[in-house]
Every structure is written in C-alpha cells, then in structure tokens.
Amino acid sequence: MQPVAPSGLTATFFLFTLLPPFLLVSAGFLAHRTARTLPRWKKPLQTATAAALLAAGLLVGLALAEGAFRLAVPGGYFHFRPVEGSSPEALVEPLSDGQAWWEYRDARGFGPDGIRTGLPRADDPALRVAVLGDSVTYGVYLDVEQSFPFLLGRRLEERCGSVDLVDLAVPGYSSLQERLSLERKGLARAPDIVIVGVFSNDMARYTLVGNMAYDIRLRDRDDVPAFSFLPFPDALNRFLVNQSVFYQYLTLKALAASDRATGEDVGQLEAAVSEMERIRGLSAAAGARLVVVLLPMLDQPWQAGEDDSTEHFYRRLREWSSTRPVTLVDLRPLLSDHPVESLRIDACCHLNPFGHQVVAALLFGQLEAAGLLDRCRQGKSQGGDVR
Image (cartoon, rainbow, N blue to C red; front, top):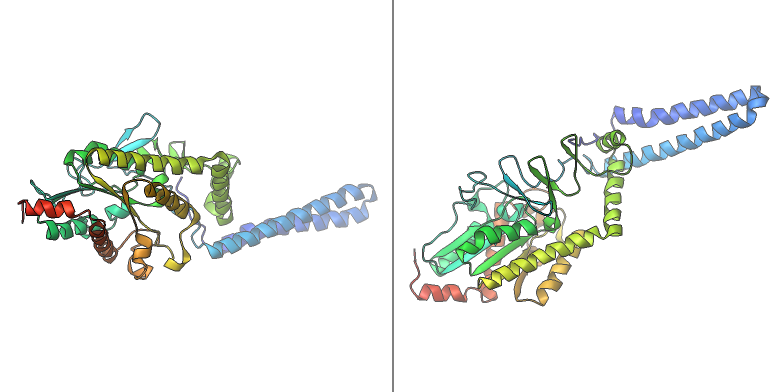
C-alpha cells in the first residue's frame, strides 16, 4: 500500500463528511414526525431520533476535526512511503534475530567491495579515519565530493599530508548496521579515529519484507508493506489511513502510546546505545578513538528545540559518553550561528552543500581541539606519504 495524501478541503471532502450527518438528521426528523402520527411507536421512534441526532453530531465533530487537521498538516502525516531502509539495488542479508543488514556494490557511489569510492586514500597515511552513519552523513542528493566526510578528509590531508578515509555511511542505516559495517569493513583499515554520525532514527529496527529492509512497524500484507494500524478491520484501516489526516494522527498517537506501554521505545533506545557501546569497544580494541557526532533535525528554527524522541535519545547518548573515553560533538549549538534554512536541502535533516562544508569545518576544529590530530602530526613528521 502506498499511502495517498488527503487533498485538503475539496468538494469530495465536503461530500463525504457532510452527507452522512445530513442523512442522519433527515432520518431523525422523519422519525420524529412519524412518532407524532403513530402513538404506539412513539417511544422507539423518539429513541431512534435521539440516536440519529447524536450520531449526526458526532460525525459533524469528526468532520470539523478532519478539516482542522487537513489545514494544519497539508498533505497528511503519511504522504511519504513507509520507512524503507534498503532499495532495490541493495544486497540484503537476513540476520539471526529477524533484522537485516544491507550494502551496495557498484551502486550509489560504492565500489565492488561495498566501500564508497572517490575519498582520500594513501598507502602509507599519517592518519586513518573510518566514518559511519546514515543518509545525513552519506549526503543524499549530493555527489560524494560535496559530503562532509570527503571535505573533512581534504582538510585532514592539508594538515597531515596523507590520509586514508573510508566512508561507510549508507542511507537508512541504524546503529546495528553501522556496527556491522565497522566490523566487516572498517576495522580492516586499522583506523586511528572512528567517526559515527548519529541521527535519532538510528534507533530503528529493520525487518525483511520480500527482499527489502523496512522499519519494524511494518507488516507484510499481501506482499505489500503497510503500517500497523489501530484495531479495525484491515480494509477499513487502509481506507481511513489513505483518506483521513485525523485518523493518521490517531494512528501515530496509538503507536506511540503502545511503545510507551510496552517499553518498546525504551528498548529500542537502549538497544541503540548498546550498539554504540559495541562500536566503542571495537574501536578501542583497534586502538582508535571514537567520535560521536549528534546530527540535528532541520525542520524548524534552532530556538524551537528538538522533538521529544530526538532529545531523549541524544540526552541518553550524552549520559553514556560522559562515563567513557568518547569524544561527543553536538552539532546543534555549533550550527546555531547559521539559519537552518541556509543549511538544509529538505525539511527533515539532510544538509545542502553549504551545510556539509560547515559541518566539515566544525568537525575538523573539534578533532583539533580534542587533541585527536596529534597522531596525525606525528605521522607527518615521521615521513608519511606527503602529497
């Protein structure tokens, strides 16, 4: 199912939201008139009249709510395709716990080894860096040369003379996929620094639907990914979620309430933090320093703050990093000198070319301030492969 966004206060909206209350009011009026001429059926008809008017009032209230939500949320909440991790050209691997890992080979800018091409690479580098992340770090809509990992690599080359930077960021990756990517590809490059670009949806869990990796909320219905809806018949759920913004809102609230009641939200958060701890352990065992970069939402001005789920996740990561040898870089306060509109390429979280330039410069400064380029300078002074 591909959700179709409701199209505002159209003639169809008025027809389907106002016609049923009109018919109910008409039926109630008819029952009331009939009760006056048939005393024997007066009480049942009065009950029917009250029921019809009550139902009509309820429907009018729902119609008003629907109209308000359509005006407040143009296009609806579910006008995007359900959250999809991989894409058709991905090589998807099922994992033992029901989740999935995927990679790209000779696609999306990745070489035959599944490692992104076009980045700084040296045989005898003064510094080795591995970058993990999702679509924000990858730089969707942009060429690799415009992404902040590439731009950071160029800045490090200017400082060190030679750098080996492997960019393993893949659109849709969660903390689990990032950890597997480090294990399977990143550690072989013996990194000195491991950088993880973190976004709030890194808590996502993916499952296989056919040969595609989708968010765990999805269910495979007739071989078509679909949201888990409220407990109504499937056909009614599908109709309402396609036609009603108000129902979409209720669905999201019900899912959030279910997560809180079952502890699913806390479980996903702690699972993501556990994966970050495993990334830290793998990095430490390889002699590398872990740098965690908190990437902000870009859907509203800085003064508005993050949404609850994002802030809760980032607060937990700050607590975790405060007791471990981890360098944490929170980009939100660092970017606050720039208007959000000047940095973003969409209304979510993805940076435009200027945004990637700013992030690369900020990260370089943070690495320098944390003393993480000392090894770089030593490598350079010892005769690294200077270009």
